[in-house]
Length: 374
Image (tube, rainbow, N blue to C red; front, side, top):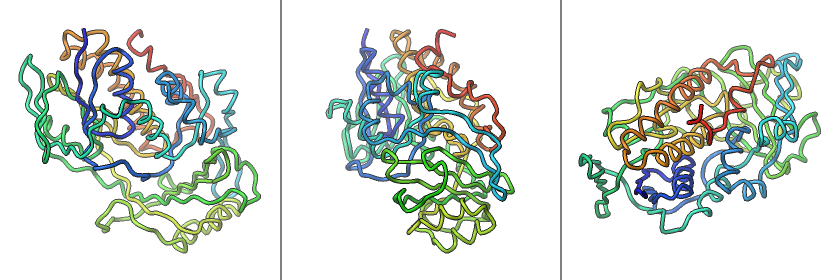
């Protein structure tokens, strides 16, 4: 039995869900409000749990054309530079978890996902204005400038400002965390310091302060992601051009090798970090949520994209098991995912993940394709 699932949002989770559902023999249509996809967004750390899921979706080879493959995951102390943990990744992670860690630009990941879909699956310029559940007949989706569409079920993969979530559970606002992030990319050959081929986290003097760096573009570029406390955010946009001088002064007491990373940056973006508390439920009837629409999280465990990709796979598996009862299928999906994503969501706020070499298996060893078999 084949069903038609409408996916609101053409980001990482939405496109991954469309691929996974279609691989299970179902029809999926992605409704994206943007008129076109652009090369926007930051760089993404895809840990083995996410890469294994993407490999089975058939996009892993395309990702590897531009991705870097960090050699290790290293923790260092902000002032002395002392290593507190060193976890082998690359081939070791592939042997242990079935996939390596990959670091890639968000746009390259979206391109790989988009290329795996028939262009007719993605409908651009569709801004959702309302959804109406019609009992056993499915869900009617209304759009601002396009005709309404009827689907058998709908998935809200439309991010932290999710229209689907608002329709299901009412209006709410995300909370500013009091943390801002700086992001920058520079050519790797500007620097000669150790471990530029690794994912390295410099742990600051408080939980809000850190510098993370990892390779991009097969190691030709280096990405820097730094966070610190800030009392308020007054910019109109969540992301705005930052000040390199401010960036360097914020971390002026860090170890010389950490400061060298910031000295190599020509420009920087500055963003506010927002979160929501874990939701007690994601689904109502034939409608559910996925990714940031369900569980926006801090970046400290590098699992935002990974959790959305896992959601997509488990959703497809649940629909494949019970296509004749989509309400039950979505409940199965929610039950299988909500405990794990809540744990990661809250753990990401605490920012202690792998500081001293804790066990990574519960995150990296998760197999989304087998989640319903547990």
